[in-house]
Image (cartoon, rainbow, N blue to C red):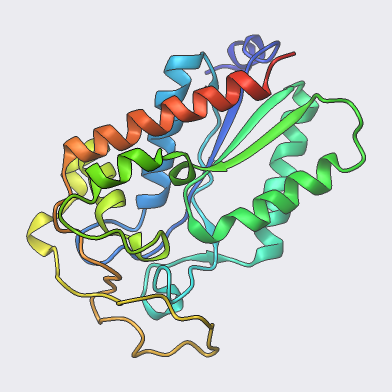
Amino acid sequence: MTWVEYQSKISGGILILPVGATEQHAQHLPLAVDSIITENIALTLALETGALVAPTLTYGYKSQPSSGGGPLFPGTIDLNGATLTNLTRDLLAEFLADGWQKIVVLNGHFENQAFLIEAADLILRGQENPFPKILITSWWDNLSSDLIPKIFDEVTFAGWELEHAAIVETSAMMYFAPHLVHKERFLEEGLEKVPTYHCFPPSRTLLPASGCLHTARSSSAEKGRLIAENVVKNIRAILAKEFVT
């Protein structure tokens, strides 16, 4: 896209900034899961709404041992909280300076959200007019509750913290990027529940050596399709509500 084509999208348009991470996702999924899923949801949403998708931010806040493995595994490349906040704030400032009035920050990494919210709050704090407006949402928060039993028809839903590299993310990857999913490496291991505390330095005995937090058994591309379509539909409804000028 040239700058002229980019400029033509701004007036009245919606900009989506996908924010993912680079972290271990057990042995059956690649490091880029959070970025791949989020970008594909953003692109699907853009096709249905005419929005423009900005280049994906592929690094995120520190993956915690009890919800992703954290520093226990090579390939998990983290940002400090202040770095992510300032980076997001700088990007939003540039988009606003270009004239965007409707911006969606689409999050795909569990630990990112507070720092994305901080960035938007700092840049728009004190603004009295309804626009420009920045919406921040994590894609899994837009999965309808009535779809959960269909996704977890064989394995009990253990909570979003333990869904790291489990059924939802694996199914989404089987739908969006099946060539990157190694079904032969699915393992029946993980945590029974998320600890109620954080420990520093992190314990190397908290997770299995594989990095698996919960089983991916029963994942499928069909479940991934249901997830993606449902999430996009629900985010579209949010945009229709919040971006009325």
